[in-house]
Image 1: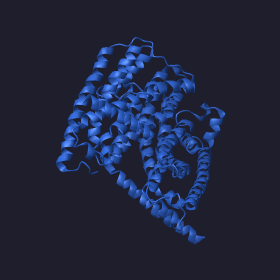
Image 2: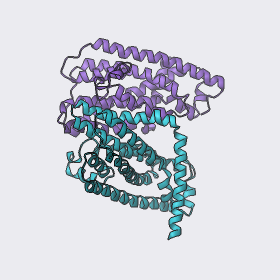
Image 3: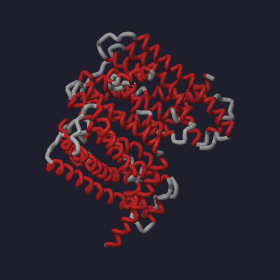
Image 4: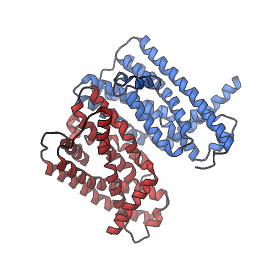
Amino acid sequence: MIRLFFAAARFQVLQMRRSPGDLLVLVTLPLLSVAFLSILVESGDRDLAPYAVVGTAVMSIWSIAVFISGGIIDTERRGGTLEAIVPTPAALSVIVVGRIMTVTVISLLGLPESILVAWAAFGIRIQVVHPAVFLLTLACTTIAVVGTATVMAGLFVLSRSAQTYQNSLTYPFYVLSGAVVPITYLPGWLQPVSKAVFLSWTSELLRASLLTAQPSRVPFQLAVILLLGVGAFGTGLLMINRVLNRLRRQGTVGQV
Amino acid sequence: MTTAIRDHARVLRYASMSAIADFRAIYTWRTWTFAWLIRILCQVSLFALLGRLLGSPGKTSFLLIGNCVFMVANTATQVISSTAWERMAGTLPLLVASPTAPFWVFTGRSVQWLLDGLSCSTVSLFLLAPLFDVPLPMPSALLAVPIMALTAVSTYCFALVLAALVLRMLSLRSLVSSLSGLTLMVLTGVQVPISFWPTPVRQLAEVLPLTHGLQAVRDLLAGDALVRIGGQAAIEAAIGVGWLLVAALAFRRFAEHGRHDGSIEFGA
C-alpha cells in the first residue's frame, strides 16, 4: 500500500511537470497578492500585510484543491483511463490520496510566494514570528486539505457539470474561511458555519504565527483542523468506494 | 455597401445565437443563480469586507463599487477561452474557408459573457450596496447599468485581441484569460485609485478598458455632473472602438497566416 501511495505521488509529480496549466493558480497568485496588498498599502495599513499574505496563500491552496485534486478521478474518467485502473488490484483510494497529497504539498508554495511578492512589490518584510505554530499549522492543514479534496474527488465524478461547481466553491469558501478578512467581520449568523470550515482555523493560526502577539489556544485549534480533516477523509474514502461501486454496477466507469 | 453590412449583421446574429446556445448548455437557471451568481456575490463581498476591516466606510464603498463593475469586465475576458474552444472543436478551417471573415464570427460567438457579466454586476451592485451601507442615489443610479454594459463591450473588444493571439497558442488560453482579468483588476482603479501607481503604469491604465467606464460609474454614484460622467463614458467607448479595430486586424492576420502555411487544422 505504501509503495502504491508513493508511486501515485511520483506519477502526479511527473504529470504536473507535463501540464503546467495545473499550476496556473501559482502563476496568477502574485497579481492577486498585489491586488490585496495595494489596498492595505494605499490605506496606510501596511501592518495588516500578513492578512493579505495569508489570504492569498489560503486561497491558492483551496483553489488548487478544488480544481486539481478534486478533479483527479473525473479527469481519469474523461481521459478514458479510469476503466484501466479500476480492474487492477491497486486500491483506487490509495492512488487518489497519494496524488492529492502531492498536489497539496505543491500548493503550499503559495505561502512563500506570497511573502516574496509582499517584499518585492511593496518592500514589506513578513517574518514568521512563531515558526512552530506556523509549521504545525501547515502540517495539519495539509492533512485536512487531503481529506476534503478526497470528498470532492468522489463528488465531482458524479456531476455532469463539475466545473460549474468547482468555480462556485472558490469565493464562498474564501469568505467563510476568513482567508483575508477574519470571520468576526462576517454577519453573526454566518460565523458558526465558518467554524465548521477547517480553513477558518488555518487562516487564524497562520496569521497568528506571523504577528508578534503570543498565539492562544494553539493545541485546541490544531486539534479542530485535524478533526475536521480526518472526518472529511473518512467521508471521502467512503464516498470514493460507493461511487466506484455505483459506476461498476451501472457499467458506466468509462462513460462521461 | 448595404449588402455587406446586412451580411455581417446576419453572421453576427447567427454567431450570437450559437453563443446563447452555448451558455444554455453550460448553465441552467438554477446553476447560474445558486452556484455562479452566489460565487460572484461572495467575491464582491470579500473585497467590501476588506473595507470594513480597514474601518473605513469610504473604502468599503470604493471597493464594493469597483468590484461590482469589475465583474462585468472579468466575465467579458472569458471570450479568450471560448474563442479557443472553437479551434479545439475543429471548426476553424471551415470558418476560414467560408466567405465571411472570422472576425465577424468570433465577435458574435461569445456575446453570452456580456449578458452574463452585466447580469452579475447589476445584481451585485443593487443587492450588496444596501447590505454594506453604500448609498445608491435613485433613480440616477440606474444609469450605472448602461455604463456597465458599455464597459462590458469595450473590455470584450480588448479581450478579442488577446483571443486572436491565443488562437495560435491554445494551451495558454486559461493563463491569458486569468492574467488579463487580474491585470485589469489591479491597474484600472478597481481596488485602488490609478493615481496610486507609478506614471508609466497609470498611462497604461488610461488605454485599458474598464478604467474610464468604472470612473463614470463612480462619478454617477457620487452625484457628479452628467457632462463629466458622459465624458468618461465617451472615452471608454473610444477605447473600445480602438481595441475592436486592433482585434479585426489580429483576426485577419491570423486567418491569412493560417491560409498561407496551412497551420489551421481540423481538430485540436
